[in-house]
Length: 163
Image (cartoon, rainbow, N blue to C red; front, side, top):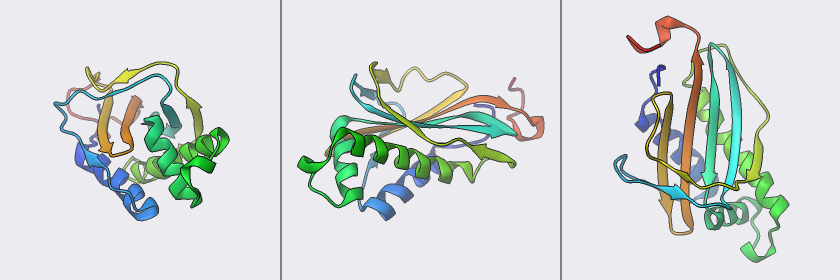
């Protein structure tokens, strides 16, 4: 990643949402540990544009997505439907990305969040240079937060020597 974001800021942004809004604690996994989400996981994402361009994704295992939805709606897990879960994933993506966005250079605009059931699996490693990923674990399942930098338009904000 050319823009200076660090793992600790991602962990903090994620924890702030999960703990304050849902009263759920997720443990960050060590960067060296490979983390995978299988097909059928839930994906929420937003695109950012401005002096920094990119995408922020949250990818939740199905069990965690259902537990988070139930917590958000204050309903038993058995009573939530797929549309409830997709709505909740959009809100989770919006909240987590909004917190991360506050650390990005201004001006920076964020799109309306999108959500879907992912048909492919995804692994945290290898992680390309233009991406940052942090994985979390919860008793209901895992979470992967991924920031994908498309462009850092202001050279003064980018890492020395990065293209």
